[in-house]
Image (tube, rainbow, N blue to C red; front, side):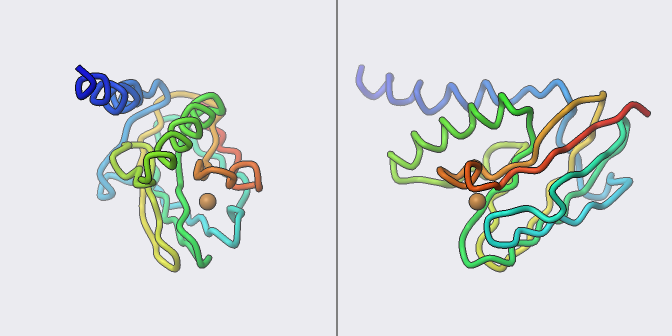
Length: 147
Ligand SMILES: [Cu+2]
């Protein structure tokens, strides 16, 4: 019974995270645009990006810092929920979030890509939800404008 409870705790956030009303992950080859985002220390450069509904955007995320960071797409509310999830995981000794379709974890001095098809206008954020990083300034404004 204790095993089942533990399984449900792990599985529930993943299931809840699978649907995104602002779009869906896409293959890098389907991208119609590439946006480069650099991680410098604990901030994203640029700190704001605007895309259009209907675009498939490949984010090239370059981590120039000496520590691991994340690049997560979502609403402010989703970032908050993800931060709570990360806190729980930190307590459990694991910080690997690569299973989330809207997130990549980038090791120090590495580069990762995340490709997303944006379906409708939205006010979103790209953020690092590793405990303490969002608060330190690791978030950018992502605006999805109408076509
Ligand atoms: Cu970070």
